[in-house]
Image (cartoon, rainbow, N blue to C red; front, side, top):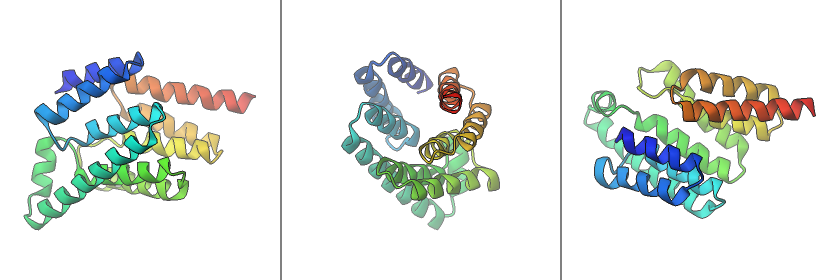
Length: 184
């Protein structure tokens, strides 16, 4: 599955969005129909291509899937076990998707609250997620709120927790843009 994520990242970086979407849909079809990271990347690709309706649809679907898993696994007492086994927390991703929906709708305060709740999970519980998505998206919210210094701090934190060169370059690009705004 990781090779498909890498192929999707490479295609998206080269602006071959259809190809990237194909790889992500393969992940959902073949490997993990409920993989939040694949839904997240699909939403981001559609958002970057100005297809807001698809972005919100993917986020809404993914948030519902996450909520169902959280409720089911908690009532059956298996949430922590399964979270470690699959390598991600549905609760973390639920807050990310709720934040993205608010973010895409320009409800920045609601988006900020959701991303901060996701970060609280990373900081307070033993979950496998790093918080990269929450930090990056919270940085973008702060950028949109014109708090450029806070945005820079968040992008540096996102850079520090991420290992993928592709996503680290996104952080550096955002940091560079913030410094360009400050200088100008």
